[in-house]
Image (cartoon, rainbow over all chains, first blue to last red; front, side):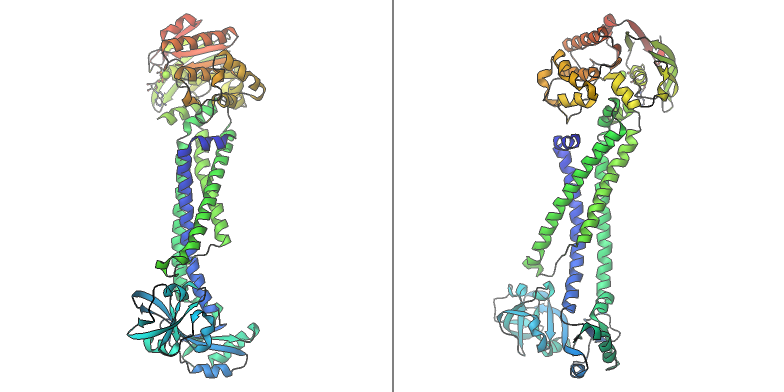
Length: 357
Length: 207
Ligand SMILES: Nc1ncnc2c1ncn2[C@@H]1O[C@H](COP(=O)(O)OP(=O)(O)O)[C@@H](O)[C@H]1O
Ligand SMILES: [Mg+2]
């Protein structure tokens, strides 16, 4: 087939197109995956053990929220409530690590963090996430201005948590000067959730009660991450696609002479366009597949890079992959076929001469 | 077989051909001579349908070129070209280059023609793997493969030494014997001895 010959006989040119498409597609994948991954991880962390979240009224960020932990006793007495726990989420230097997550929780939530070593923390003790534990060989660690004994190591599968420490909510309360950042409540059955939300709302005038689903949807931080990642990935996408289209049109322009010769030999416009179509299709599809594989590889490795402490995580959704595939091929075809079509309308001899110039 | 009436051509505002009218008869060896820049290539391109003249009309076998329905098929089946530079496709080997130009029912001619031009053993080489003289013979083979009624050659020996030039002239003369009309544009006056008709151009006009 003539398209394959054209590609294989000009390896340098083919490599140029191939690598620029690959890089463009990879940039799109990695940027959008990482930002999606961050959101996904955060939502997973909040959603794991609760259907309802209680935060301080009028506070947009859980970091500033302060809810009275004493409410838990009243909450547990409500109908259809299966369990509830309080949580403080903060960040602080830990030992020599400049910043890491701190999760203070009521003891009934400890089982969420699977121990791989040692035991759950008592007052004045912490357990370290697997990723963070790699940084410490000591038996105790400084957090804020206090020294905590390391009682164990845990794993939870959530990058944020694995790079942080878990302690009793009382200790975290002293560090961050609050009672609880939020309280998570789980219901006995999903159908009762709305009923519980209503009942909880009457408990105090200083709290805001939402289903975790709604919370994740409306949470400002997510909105900001989502919007900015949307802007960044759209830009990466647009730039990548423009790059693909312009590389393709450059290549086509450099082949005007060849098209002129073919036209002079009596080859139809359709013949030229058809061959270029297949060339472009082969090139962009294979570059896409290559980029997809590399990206999946990188996303696979990212959570295991010590320096990132597991904070950077990425998930590549099928819909993103399909969307990028179609737009890559579309733009590559656009970039190659439009100039080729215009060129094929020019008098053959002028094409040949333009090609020489 | 080709009738040129009142053809003028402009590149932008610059007029390079001035109201030319003449006729090429079947079986002729026409030599378009003239200095560089006199308009030979432009005229040859118009004659061979590769360039639309700004003004005037070109009739081939009494039919206006503009009215030819399938110009691609017309070019492929009726016309052969040889350019100064061989213009072979670099990613196709010699055989494939000729096969690209060949009509389906003429593909069986390829080996015969290659043999006749003494380049059969080059079939599987690529254009950059053979000499300039050999390339020009391949270009000629490509022009002859469909047994066209007419062959156009623009400075076909412009990049060849005199030994190879003579070979090309002889091959064109042979095509003429086989009944093909030949039109050659060149500033090489040695072609005169092969020509049956000569048109001298100067500044876009026939002398
Ligand atoms: N594609 C072009 N664009 C503009 N001017 C051209 C082009 N091709 C040829 N010319 C001009 O037209 C004139 C005739 O050129 P050409 O037909 O190539 O003559 P020849 O083949 O006799 O050397 C020259 O002055 C040349 O500069
Ligand atoms: Mg010329």
